[in-house]
Amino acid sequence: MDITLLVREFGLPLGILASVFVLLMTGRLIPKATVDKLVKAESDRGDMWAEAYKTERALRVEQDKIMRESMEGVRTVTEMVRTLDRARRAGEGT
Image (cartoon, rainbow, N blue to C red; front, side, top):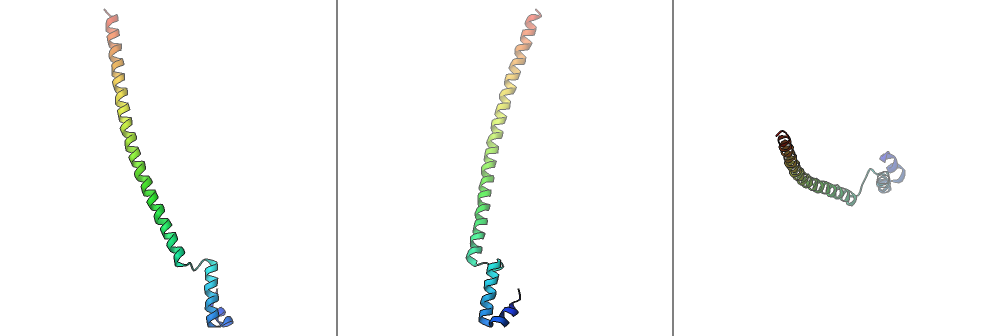
């Protein structure tokens, strides 16, 4: 877009107005309110992701705790079964 052509064609005031209109319509000039809304939306999205990350980490810590407790239970049961098996074999040998 050539601003000088618009100014020459319409005169200075109308040329500037036409230039602003063309810039707005092509998306090269964005109103401040729109920019502020976009920046706030990005900020809110970042806050949402940060909160989701914190929640995920807390859930992961709890899941790890449950898995450790479950594994300890499995080890205990495994040791009990092995002890009973040893006792049964020792009883059969007598």
